[in-house]
Length: 367
Image (tube, rainbow, N blue to C red; front, side, top):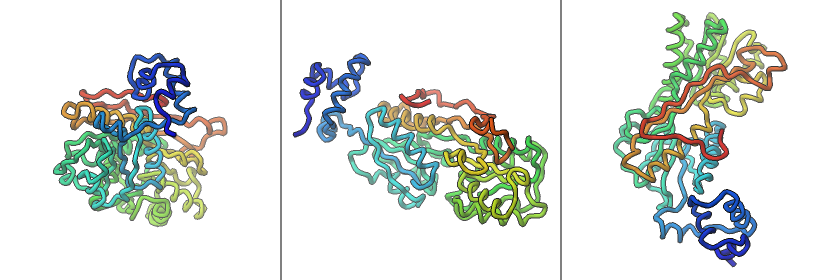
C-alpha cells in the first residue's frame, strides 16, 4: 500500500500541511520540524507521485545531464557533483552518454528527449557553434565548457587558456625550458585542446622561450594509451624535452607509465603536469601535479543556472559563469618530503567571474 502524506503526518505528529511543505521544500518550516518530518519520510519509505506533481505544477523534478563519456574520470566526477547539487533541490538527474558524436549531440540539443525532463545540463564536444546557435531547444539548457563561445546560450566554464598558461608557467618557474605539449587534436571536436595549446604558447611567449618544432605532440584520443604513445614521440625529439604538459590527466597517467617503463625518472629527468586534477592524480606514483577547475563550484553553478532559467528564462538567457581553477603541485614536477605528501600545495587560484545577472550560491554539502 502506498504511503500517503497523512501517514507521514501521523507518524511525525504534525499536520498534513506541514508534511506537504517539507515535501515541496517550502520555506517557513523550522529545521527541527523539517528533520522530524524527513525522518518519518525516510522511515516509511515515502516517494512522491511525480505524475501528479507534474500535472499540478507543470514540472516533474527531473533534469537531464548529457556528457560525452561516463567512463572518463573527469566527467564521472562532474556527474557526481551535479547529481548531489540537484538532490539538494529535490531534483532527480537522468544521465545520457553522447560519446561526443555530433549526431547524438544534435539530438540532445534539439530537444528530442522525454517530455518529463524540465531542463538539461549539456557538455558538447562535436556539435558546431552554428548548430548550437540555430537550435531551438524545447527545454532550458545550460552548457558546460567554453569552446562554444559564439552561441548565445547559458554557459558554465573554466578558463582553459588561463589554466594552461598557469600550468606551463609553473614548469618554467621550476627551471624547465624544453616543454612539450601533449594532446594536440584537429577537427571540430578539438576546440578545448586548442584553447589549452594557446595557453601553453602564451606562457612560453611571456618567458621568451622558443621550443624546437615538433614539441606540440598530436594524439588520436585523450586517453591513457594515447599518453603512453605520445611519450615515445616526445622522447625521440632532439633535444629531448625536460617537461611534458599533458592536456588532461588521462594522457599524463599514460605518460607516467611509459616513462617508468623506459627508465626515465619523474621529475628528476622530466617533469609531468596534467589537466583536470581527477582523484586518481593523488594516488598514482609519482603523484601527478595537475591544474583543474573547482568541480564543486562547477556543479553548483550549472544547477544554479538551470534553476534560474526555469524560474526566469528571459532574464537569465545567455548568462556566463566562469568557475575558479587551481594548480596543485605534487611529486611529478617537484620532489617533496614525506611530510608534505598528504598536503599538496595550492599555488594558484583564480576568483570566479560571474555574469552580473547571476548569483552563485553553494548548495548544501559543498565546500
